[in-house]
Image (cartoon, rainbow over all chains, first blue to last red; front, side, top):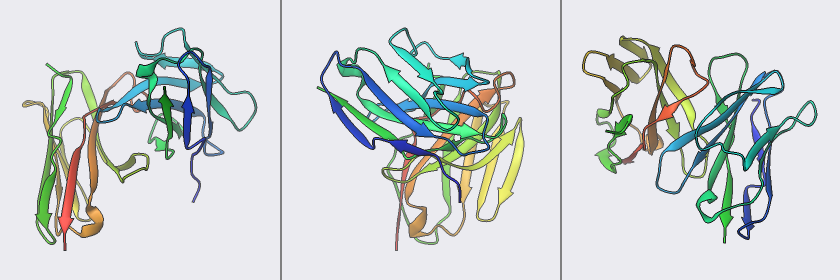
Length: 112
Length: 113
């Protein structure tokens, strides 16, 4: 069964460092998303991406965040200068159209 | 008032029980209502969704939406230990559809054999 894969599963970084989280969406999907879940809190929408541009973003997705689809398969989330409060589980998701989202298993980011 | 509220639990039931999970919401623009299941260290997995009001049934699962009360429910019949997980409600409005989901905090369900 096709699935969304994410790497790394866990990354530990120092505050102020840049982090790139990677995702391989399901191959025929056209819409891509990043959500995050701070420990003990709800899953929160960050950004959606379609046709090589951002289609929606939340207030959380400020200038320190960026997304990119550098080739035909990867979808990345970059955090330019990490803060302690960026520590969270980051979920990538994809969808074929504007319907059901398929989530990956997540990348846990720990900022020290 | 939070946009979506959900009791975090945990909710502990014996195998075979009927489980009722609920969410309330404040945004009357929400039209899509979803239930996700999340196992430990996994991503959310869509169980069911409904559009606007009404009921939807899928096997042991029934989703209900009462827009007048801004209240949604998920019922699980004949609960199994494998149903032990965190159940997340999620919602979105007609304009954003599935693209921009607002989640509840999730209810942790424990079904004991």
